[in-house]
Amino acid sequence: MAEILTLSSTLSLKIATETLEIIDNRLSKKKSKVSCAAGVVGPTGPATRKIPLFHVLWAELSSEFKLLSVTFAEHTSKTAVRPKKLDYPLDLADVEAAAQWVEQLFQKSYGGAQRERRIRVLINPRGGRGNAQELWANECEPIFRAARSRLDVELTTHHEHALKIAEELDIDSYDAVACVSGDGVPHEVFNGLGRRKDARRALHKIAVCPLPAGSGNGMCWTATGAGTGSMASLIYIKGVLTPIDLVSVTQGDKRILSLLSQSFGIVAESDLGTDHLRWMGGARFTWGLLTRIWGRDAYPCDVAYKVVMDDKNAIRDYYRRSGDPSKEEEDDSEEGLPSLKFGTINDPLPEGWVFNPQPTMGNFFAGNMSRVSADAAFFPAALPSEGKIDVISIDANIGRVISLKMMTAAQDGSHYDMDCVKYRKVLGYRLVPHGKTGYISIDGEPINYEPFQAESHQGLGRTFTRDGKYTGGEYLMKPDAKK
Ligand SMILES: Nc1ncnc2c1ncn2[C@@H]1O[C@H](COP(=O)(O)OP(=O)(O)OP(=O)(O)O)[C@@H](O)[C@H]1O
Image 1 (spheres, helix red, strand yellow):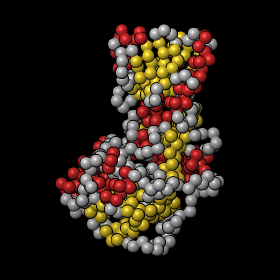
Image 2 (cartoon, helix red, strand yellow):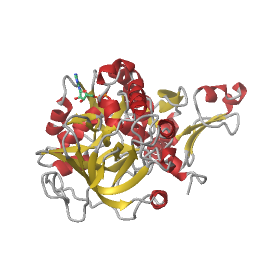
Image 3 (cartoon, protein in one colour):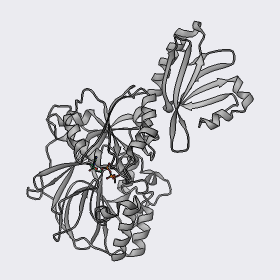
Image 4 (spheres, protein in one colour):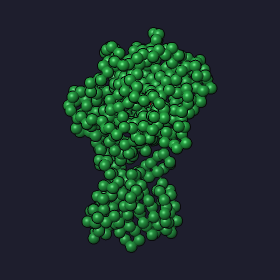
């Protein structure tokens, strides 16, 4: 099949390995100013515009086959895109070749991604700074519409509304639930899917796709590496369905699914203990950390782990190999959630688990995803589907200067190599807090200040990522990173 479609003596379109090349001899006179303004990669020659195939959203023959239109996501800045349509008059004699070429362009540019994804969109008008509706209308919706995504849009009106929607979702009518929100709404969607009788099939089928309208947006950053609604939308349109680990947390008689993190100590306190400072936006969390570092607050507890790895060099090697070769078991049965291998918090401590008393615990932070916000890659070794939880623990007595250094280092994940940071990969753990009051956070949401137990479920959930990988582990891939 021809990869080049010749439209006239001066104009042809070529599907190359990574790009769509528009070879337009008339452009040469303009010295390719257009291509630069359009955010197009290149140029290799003055007459060639190169559009990454990943950015191609749609192509069609229209107006009784007299026009070929190609729509792509054009960069408006390094981190944002908008749809741009290019129309080319078509000679009637070319129609068949053009139709074949369009199909080929779709195959090459969509690869394994399904076209016209059916997406239930949930917008939390109260998330983050309250700009979710604008973010959707201005940044996300135009990209989805240009790709002909089939959208059902709804505003969430109250806490746990998204949970109910997910619980009742007709999962055969949708491929994804996009949450224009922070991490709270995706947390509800996973838990709503998890409450269904057909939980496992629902969690395996529906990709949960957060669009960044919260304050942390950890899942969006981890899955897409994007901080703008438009870039994240592009990745959810063109990305591949990716199995991701979810964690069951049991407390009392409850079982909660966690997608992002569980925290006890300084991180939980800085997040949940500063709710009255929401007006500060992202700075609220930093303020919370600084005041607690200054106070050298300790959070005594007992912790027991089912450790898989606790040597940082071994974890780094494992990460560089992208984990173990074993894959998660595919089980699309109609059943509910997978059973708990280690039982619940109400069962005796599983065999082989030993409690470590931690009277000076400063930070207990367990995570499934590498990034918890734009500037915090706390779990650089986290992989999407490995069935393990990454756990960081830090003593409260490390000193203020080292604590501050750690905060800065966490921006790129380099805190990993600081001696004060203990980093483990575990299958599960149990934490018993001391004292009567304090904060425990699951995905940024509070749970009771009581003992809880967690275990990982390999590849139980789904999202779309660009290439099946998480972003945020770049530090561990650096050749000069400490060994
Ligand atoms: N209309 C609404 N009014 C009040 N609360 C809502 C509404 N819709 C959803 N919520 C609740 O808002 C909470 C937070 O949502 P979301 O994750 O969008 O924002 P965030 O917590 O500010 O973001 P981040 O997790 O990034 O900090 C969720 O627990 C959800 O139940």
